[in-house]
Length: 340
Image 1 (cartoon, rainbow, N blue to C red):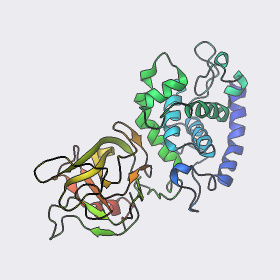
Image 2: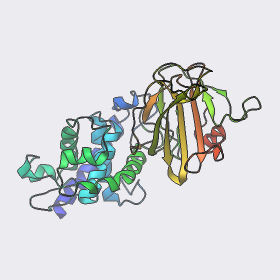
Image 3: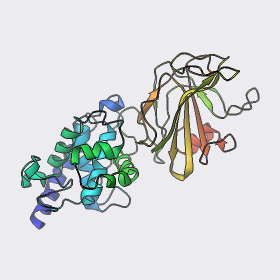
Image 4: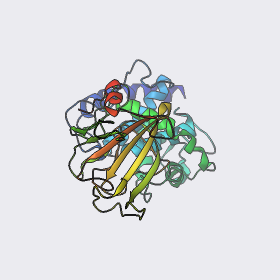
C-alpha cells in the first residue's frame, strides 16, 4: 500500500501540472465550450482544497473530476462518480476490499474492469467508470442511485443516494470560483441564471405582487442553476381565468394565468430559487442534485407572459411562498453574482 500511495503521489504532481496547462482548453460541451476565463479546477497540491476532505481524498476527487472533464463528461457524471467513490472507498485508493475489489471504485478484475495494477491508478479507474456510465440509458436524468447501480452492480445499491448532496458540493468546489465555460460562479457559490437586463423589478409600484424579477433574454437562451442544490419542483402552471388548464408547450399571453413551465431548486440554508416561463419542460427532474451554472432549461414565454424572458425568484425559506420572497437583485448582489 505504501508503494502504491507513493506512486500515486508522484503521479499527482504531474497531473496537477497537466491540469494547469490544458484544463482551460478542455471544457465539457455541457457548459457550452471555453470562454477564456481561466482553468477548471481549483487545486492546491500542498493541502486540501475541499472542506471536510483530507489532502488524499481531495486529490482523488480532483482526478475523478479532471478525467470527466477531459472526457467531455457533463458535471452530472462527475457527481455520480464521486458519490460512488465516497460509498465504495471514502475516496481512498484502497489496496483491496471484498473479494478481488480494488481502488477508489472497488472495481473487480474478475469482472473485466482491468488488472489490479490498472485499477490502482485513480485516473484509469475513473475512466473505466465513465466509459460504462455513458452506456446507461438516460443516465443524466434517472436517479443517481439507479445510474450508479447500473454501472457498479453493488450488493448495497441504496447506499449511493446518501452521498449525492456531498458529491455535488465536492464537484462544485473542484470547479473553482469561475467554474467551466461561460457560467461564472462567485466565491459564495452563486451565478446569474441567464444573461440580459432586468426589465421588470421586484414588487415595483406598478406591479406590487411581482415576487421576482424579469430578465430580458431571447427565446431559447440557456437557463442555469443559480447555485448548487436539489430540484424540488418541476411544474406546468398555466390556466385561463376560469381555471381551465392551458398547455405550457405553447406561447402564453397576458390573458393566461400562471408561471408556465417552471422549476424550483432548494439550496443550503433553505433558500429556494424559482425559474418561470420556460420554453419547454425543464431538463432536470425532482430530486436531482445540480451544481451552480448547470443548464436546467431554456428561456421561453409560457404561461402569463407577453414575450420571452426569465422570471427569476429567490425565497428565504422553504417551501417558497409570497411571504418569504426576497428581492433577487439585492440577494444576488450580496452573494457576488449581480444580475446586471
